[in-house]
Image (tube, rainbow, N blue to C red; front, side, top):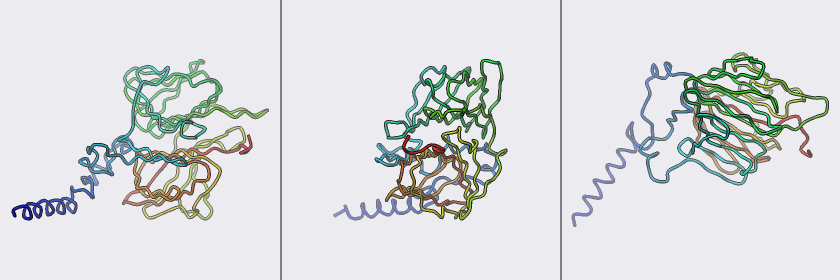
Length: 299
């Protein structure tokens, strides 16, 4: 007879937790002043969408893998030594085992670390989300890459990424599709130096980090959405995508599924999967997007 009062106490406690500021439905609040003092893209390596007590539940993950898309979230990353890199760990996020024709991975570089070379005929794109690295080649040319900086390295180009402290990189690699009389070049830049491009019929802001010219068989887009903005086109196309949410949060539709996403989440989109995004929250959403371009689907 004493079971009902005990159950009532338990249910009342769960309801109170679910509606409190630190309960199931919200993460611990971050003061606005603390938010502004954080470095750029800090949430990529410090996700905040899910409350910590839910993340610690056995088996809990927001990651999803299906035949035409995947959402890879930070709590499911598995880091291991990167082949031919020194003192660096990597987490492979997208690979041909999924059905992609490119590789996307995080590289965490530690004190006195150095990258290896990609395989023969493979091009590489590097984007810095934390820390700083130097890019060097055989001619002793050295470029420093800091947060929000990037580099495109042509296939079979001798180079190394070096780090004296610590850094987190997102890296894309794919086997280059050569065209007669066309060749790519080494490119180093930063997002804030890239011009805003027109997006007819859309509201988001767009920057392209690589030239749109024929030699380049992929591009990297930086797309910004203010809170409440969304894609007007419900996209279905032959291109593949690899996406890293750099800032903010929102909802991504992939196929018939709808996913809450936040900074640090990675998405793979296969050809022709229906896709759509809406930005939520109180700050802008920014994501980095891989897209294959300038090649016939028949190749």
